[in-house]
Image 1 (tube, rainbow, N blue to C red):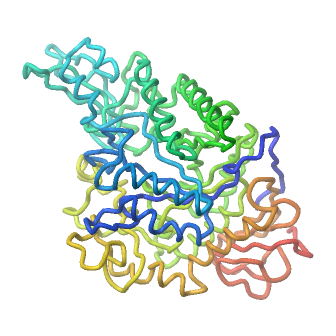
Image 2: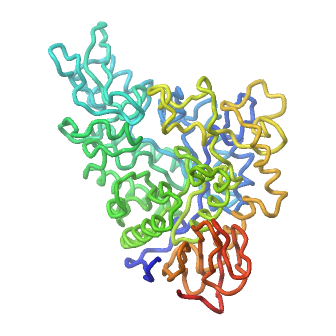
Image 3: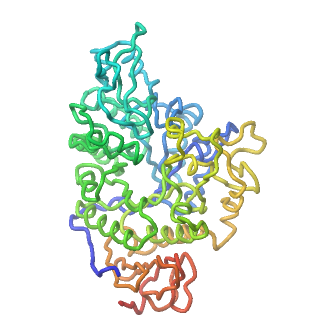
Length: 553
């Protein structure tokens, strides 16, 4: 059974909006299409901002909408300071900033500093100007091994499959040097040891800060610097095998922290200028919470996504351990934990938690959401979680667009299934995602089962997943026990995880397969499933506020 213990922040920090904010992640391509081309756009984001406000989120994080050939759906950027025409233009973006302000929503943008598109002007100049040129020094170009340079410079493998190196064709047509790409050949990695790169991205930050954004989500925040000698790895295929940034020679180098100090200083400069606090939240995939804590020291990133909960199986001991570690290690820095259960790269919780029993997935996903929203710190909700959307697992091979599938031929780790365009209304595709009689179908097909998950239907059903999320977010605003603050574990019967927030809110989750005694006498304030005669149903989470009696077993 879980032990009784407590955690509280040990380092004082100024009160800031991001400490306990609930942010809504918008994958623009799949959110709402207004022009009928089958692809979501910025106008569609503006059109549905009222949904985010109605749900009760504090702001939105937009996935990339910059100029891109879309080899990795926007994470291969050819111009970091322009809007791709498929999504709109800068004028439309400026209207989005204004609308967010009017609705009281924060606006956070994705920034991708590890790599760019092979169409980026810098990379095209690097190819044209040849070995030894200043343009090549902005990337990782190196001579190959072997008698004629026919072998890659080292043995690293790319996360999305295949070698992490591609051989360039020189201007005279000869096979020449190799360039590094830790994702796909269309995404060459920048060389952050070159001062041009740092200067460029500081300009990118200022460009968007000057247009009024509230901060940035930083892609691959533990990357950027590579081992200076680019040596062979003792486990070269670890990134490809795990689909994660694990190779210690390619990720999490100590020099990366200086970047975040510089970026933090830029954000502080803007905060001092107008009093609006800007946010840096990093995608820092590192092995332990203690290592992640290094990224959120007071002069570095404000927050970093805590992925250990996202990767946790439906298991009480696992949840308890990762929550305990995160609250201990990350709050000790003065930051708060940034909880997340889903995002655009992961299998949706409804399907991930189901395991071999699909029928259990929806209840477990709702319970996990209520648990996450009761934890101290901030939380991010991925679009569609509030509709209870499952992962789409039966896309035909010919419709899969993920470069992982194109490079490996394997469905393992592909991400299209969580990126299906959202269902807003109606009984059949495109479910209000695109206008009626649109000339193009949605860029990924929506299954007929989405009819049961439309926003329209969810809003009309008081017992829906949408209303559970909405009620939980409303209580986070109203109850001082929720959001930033303390956590104290309760002793519980087998199968139940429970903790106290502040001075009087109890959250309990039944991870077991049978009803279990609730730790509180009386009906809950909010519950994800049935609570009858003092028992929590299986896969049910519940909140009680200021209970008159708390059982310790």
